[in-house]
Length: 405
Image 1 (cartoon, rainbow, N blue to C red):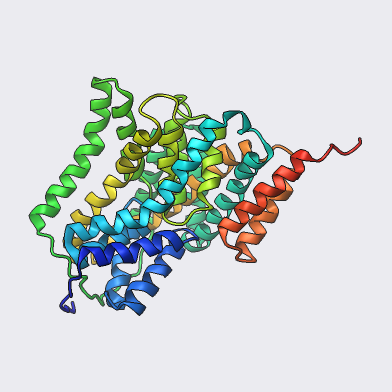
Image 2 (image 1 turned 90 degrees about the vertical axis):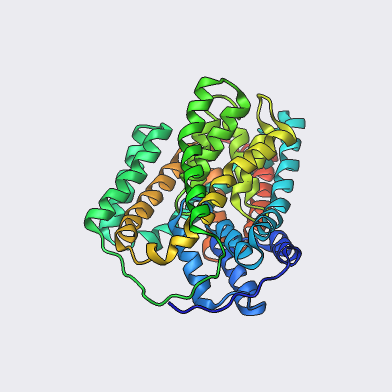
């Protein structure tokens, strides 16, 4: 292992650097990692190339939003725990506020949720999730074996649409990867220079699992919507492998069946989330805002946002000190190959239900979704612009008189 001294910077500098990215980082988690590389490896030279690559590898291995976790790791390395919080807060706040404001608009004008423009947001969600499935499948399912794992995972989730099955297919993917897949390993490594003791790291991991196990018990023992919110969003943030889009089926199964959020409002918010920069997990702020039961509004948004991101902090702090050993543990990499394939299946199932079944109601909707998908995948049009164009297209379609039979 090659070790280099890591120069610290004030947390305020970390905050300002990530705040600019929070306003300008469109395009999803993969694009975010590109922005981070340009900003912190190339331009500011805060991190060495190989150290950044290893940090990205770790955060892709962990459940949770990879780009946000990379940001937390960079902030932790450069300015300690205050820097980690500054990086997360600055990168997350702009999109969280934008989606919270949109949520207040949906609540205030509930009668327009079935209007053409709002329906366009559900149509664009089809294109965005299809793009995510397309991109992830090409990378994570490059052979027949992993395609099979993805298809079986999708079939299982569609046949038994309950949250426990979603967790089960991830475990199934890991078991298949452990037995049948073999990952390539790299030996070259540069330390990130994070100053976290192993004792604190173990405490962080114990706290992570305590939340994962204890919160459902607490929610069952003390019926409270606030506790149930923390439990649901903490669990969703703990079980998401493969990027922000994968949180869609987990959150949908948590908030729609109990009646906290209508399916139409859920998909409209998910479509709007594509038009803002920053992490897709800020969709949780929108859901907290539009919920029927209290706490909702700004209080609900803050609760949901903190709950869904809390596992990311605990996992980054808990694993970075052990990464040198973990990265050589090829069994973990083998399992991850199967987990990633199962994640593609999970997202494929979500593409059909609830995204397709709620968004595609006519041949015109299908044509609009196909056009949006083409713009995203082949013309590389920015997602925010595709959202605006699709919403406008759906509104025009809704206002036109029907064609004569």
